[in-house]
Length: 434
Image 1 (tube, rainbow, N blue to C red):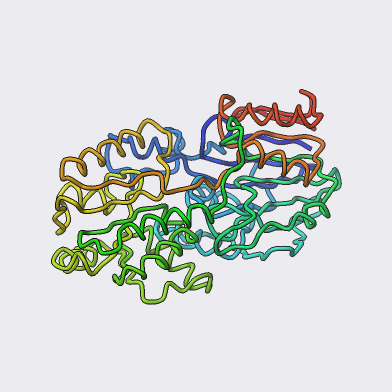
Image 2: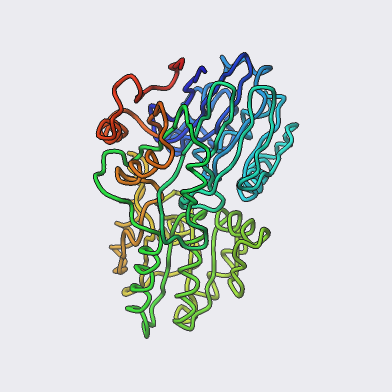
């Protein structure tokens, strides 16, 4: 087996891996790295071409991949750091694209957003259905818990051994709106030759809390806000359908109309409704800017009758919450209004600066700010130990970030009996033969 690490091994994002068995190739993920786009100052980043995006480091550089030998592109879940480069890169390949139903539907919206019609077939594959791809590769999606719907542990079946790709995951025994992982099913796919292990929090010596903990945090905030006559505004990751479910269900107990504002919320929630993952009945879903303006005019005069959920949890410059705080939208913040950040701040220079800017604006207006009403979707060291014990791989490749982030999981593996020859810390552009 040969593995080429194209992106996601020197940074958090831009995930892309090439797997080769007997002259047949398979690609895992085509992700976006957002910070270079956010900080781009030479023009409108929406005008950037494929070559521009590669040049600034926003998407993987796959120019050296011999694309005629690639038999399929497989996506593990619907987050942009795993699928966001597909509209720019996939057209160079003559193979099909595969993902779980939610992932494929989100992919379709990305192609539509960029006005790109893929020549590739987009094929939806459910859990526990082995798919024969070519002579050397079959694959299967196993249910995995994370912070978006239909996340999969991708299992590749090859003549040289099985490969498990766990970008991204956590072991959640009390998930919201999704099923627990099936540990017995994981054991059935043994022996695993190689495990790709999401190690974003490999340096954290703990167990990642369940999403049910975040649900209780949302409940606690909303209970404290009962009887409050000021504006109540939640912001979270648009793709986090389980979190949105919790906000809506507890928000209804305030007797307020729940309104979702922002294009990315419209995108992810519309797909969830289309697939009957959760119907969000009686929620107003408003995506386009002119309609957001119209809705906010009404909310501004009746702020005690609405609960707003909007984009902007990272302080993104053109997101709804930032524009509200800057006065660019017809909503006037008043002293005592409430803003709840049901998220963590992504630790990049651009994002930290954007969030500080947004919070400073809100503080000057006398807004009550609630932060970190959140638990992560990424496993810590105890999650890694559990997954390794479930799958018992021969080799472990630590992924989803640079060496200083992932190296903690090397110590976890050592504790379980792995030596340096069987645990691999790699960088973008490197190749590993096993």
